[in-house]
Length: 249
Image (cartoon, rainbow, N blue to C red):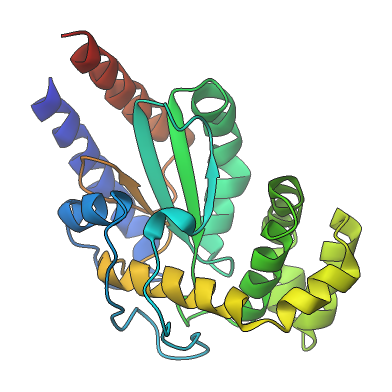
């Protein structure tokens, strides 16, 4: 059964790579072993990530991967998925607008899957660093506010991406999401929020991520691209069924 599942995941990764190739040209390698190490909490040293421009600085300290990003779903779920996305990526937006709502309802909120959303900066998209900083500072206030803001960031991606004043645009979005503005501004002035972004970006480099979005279903090769909803549902259903059967046997 597991061999069949691995085949399903590999085929899906191959089929979706073409969709990502126009925006990110390098293929992602099989780094599931590194992924497992990171997710077990093993500290990793920083490496040079993808992209060349508008990157956060190299982190000055090692970070526990488990403390980065935004976790949703039960920590007792039999399936774990890590999503690495850049807020400026069009295919990431497509995934979050078209596919993620179904996965949230059918797998995450139902307790089948624990999902880690790890936003990082590829250096390929204008204003992405500014927006990621805002998202981190919103998460520092509450997960609920983070969810509200990120939904807005995906929906109105073109507004902040094309803006000559992205700080003003995203600050307004954060305020409309309900953040404490004074606390938000103080966070933006604190270097710790940049350290988290730097660590997430370095982790993406360690994992060999070369395109966004990239998904690691723990125990399987990575998937790259905005998979069709039906394909993602089929994959997660198969992986969940297999995980439950393994726990019974």
